[in-house]
Structure formats: C-alpha cells, structure tokens
Length: 203
Image (tube, rainbow, N blue to C red; front, side, top):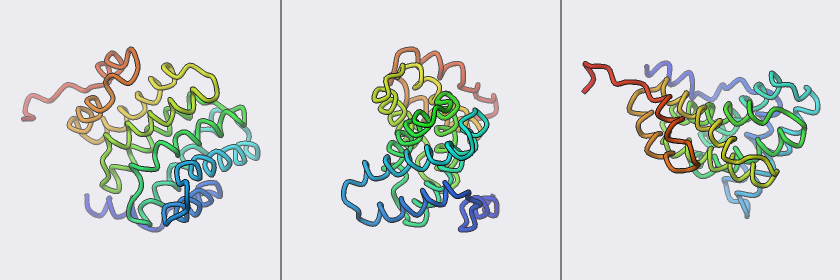
C-alpha cells in the first residue's frame, strides 16, 4: 500500500497541457496571491474552456480535460503542502463554468470532478469527506451562476463523490454521507442507494 501511495502521490504526475497550466497557476496562488478563491476559479475556468475549444466539447473530451484539471490541482496542493480542502470548491466551480463556456457536458464534468477530487484527496491523505463537500459546494455555486438546475447537478456530483468514497472504504462512504446529507433535496435517497452494506465481519 505504501508503494502504491508513493506512486500515486509522487512528483512524476502525467499531466496534459491544461493540467500543467492549472498546477503552475494554483501553486502561485496558494503561495500568497491576493483573492485566492477568485484567482483559482478564473484560472481553472479559462484552462478548461481553452482546452475544450481545442479538443472539442464532446463528453469524452470533457471527461479527459476534467480529469486532467483535477490531477493538476491536486499535484499543485501537494507540492505546496496544503490547500486542497480550501481550493476544491473554486476548482469545481471553475471546471463547471469552463465546460459551460465551451458548450461541453456539465453533467459528465460534475460527476468526474467530484470523483477525482475525492480519489485525489485519499491519495495524498487529505480529508475525503470535506473535499467531497467542497466539490459539491463548488458545483452548486457554478450552477446558480450559469442558470442551470443546481439541485440536479449537485446530485450528479454527489454520486461521483460517493462512488469514489466507496472504492476507499465503508468508513469513507459513511463520513461522506454525514458530510453531504442535507445539501439539497433528495440527497438522502442518492446517498442511501450508494452506501454499501457493511460486511458482517466488519466491526
């Protein structure tokens, strides 16, 4: 497990141009640029939009770019040594707004960004439940700004967060459930359906 963790969280992260751009920008922001939150959201939004304008905004390309952006963001916070729980909301917000700017699939983006944020948090030892909550908060904020159904998009992102948590442990899913219940209507049903049953031999 230690070797796997080292491999996942090591410096040699395979990033595309968009992820590298976000990594460099967030490292700079987290070291002291004023108005960090708006800087990060704007940086991510522009990086996503620019990347999708080059690659195309189909669902597959949206998935690839969203994943790359999250990898870059996580690599940046790991390099600085802090900041993932703080910056996740703005990263998520920027992704949704950038995908929307490019006419991409915001549903795919909402699910993938939450999944990637939680998995990345686990890989570097950050609090997966808090990161998941911040990702959903960012999706909701972006949805309200671009004028789409925030509740429905939040449910999609919650599903992505819970899916990632379920690959970690039952404990991670339970913590995620406690953190996310009550955000939007219908979340209890979403979480209840995703929560795995505890094995009989697990205490």
